[in-house]
Image (cartoon, rainbow, N blue to C red; front, side):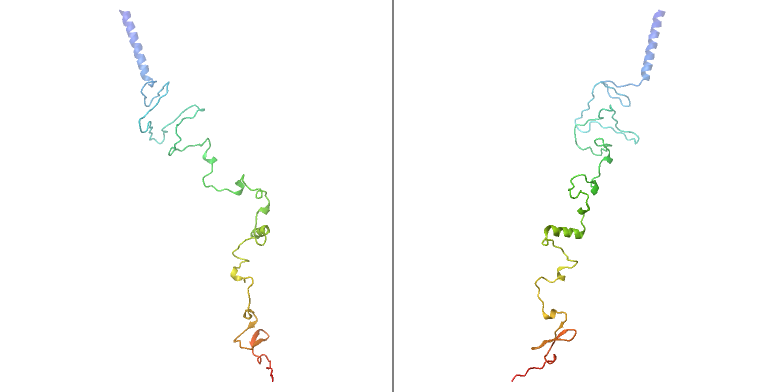
Length: 214
């Protein structure tokens, strides 16, 4: 009888020790178990979440020091895979095709002549100064290429508009002469030189006596 009691107490003591040890160890969820929050969940097969409508899985973390979602995988494998190329709003990536933002140019950026690497005409890329024209050189180049009838229609000629010049084939009258002064011209008058200008004068004013005919 004493041996039976001894075996009973030994078995009871062993069971209590196992129970205490199991209680002290963290519980984990295995394949087929319900997912347990705040604990490790281990599964030997793939876990699939399927929803009829709306968001299938949502992770919320309002702490400013915590990361809502962390994906850890082998360094040789991508951390996740998607089946759609639809734009993800507000997704801010660190790299694009393995390159940071500094590897790209901003939209609308300028370029200098030295930045051109192709498509430059040979006569512009020969490095000679003759490919750069001043204003007189540009006009001379046009005239040399197309002659005097180049069709070059300027707004000014030597700084003057067309109203400054006389039209080809124009005529003049006596009054247009700068040293002629005519006033109240009468019949039979002639021009007389006064020493400074030509003026109209009668015969007597010019010192010419009228001829008398019988």
